[in-house]
Image 1 (cartoon, rainbow, N blue to C red):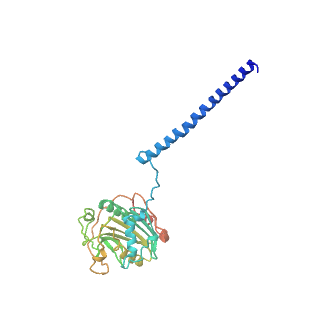
Image 2 (image 1 turned 60 degrees about the vertical axis):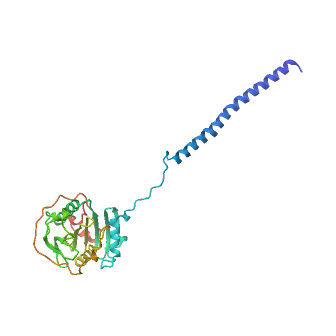
Image 3 (image 1 turned 120 degrees about the horizontal axis):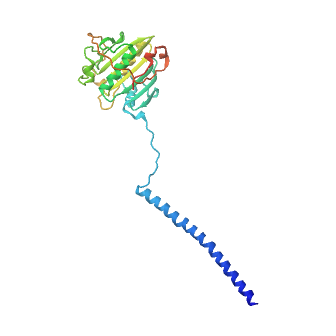
Length: 286
């Protein structure tokens, strides 16, 4: 074979080898990077997660306001062994927040119920006076008339002896100087367009409630038993301490108290309550 031909063949082999090496080196680098760098990143991420330096996303448990103290108190009314048993089925109520529950048609004589707790006695009675003023269409007035089976217009105190004392000023309630044996809260009632509207407070738990319904006697009897059966956690069952089941009685003496400001928001009851004027269909202030 001619020497020149051999030299050319050798040169071709050298060129091919060089080209092969030039191609294989980048491929090897890429494979190394993907294998080792990527693997190291995955290892570092895993180690960081284990060390708590990397956020781990978990699905948050949804908040249920039905577990609130207020809603549990509502459920307790329906299970009470007193005449209120079955009067407030939890299935008819919705927990709007941990401090507000709204119920629709829990009883044939009740169109709507609103219950709310407040952070202080001052806030509770400011909301109460504002709601009473809105329903009556006049400045708040305390200790007049009564709310019983036969009295459907008035504002007065109530206690767990089924009596409605009219000689305690609202200032005793806001200051916390009133004792349960004297009065456990206050109540206001008004009758308009065949509907009875009752707004009341309960000092234990700083609760305000409102019920609207018809016929008025049956609505009143619903309130009479239910409001005695609302027990917020941390307080003894008042039904166990009552000396008897006497009917509510009227008392005497009247005192006028100045009202507070207007309501900050409203809630509308459902059902036939739409017959009432707008002042009686707005809900409790927030």
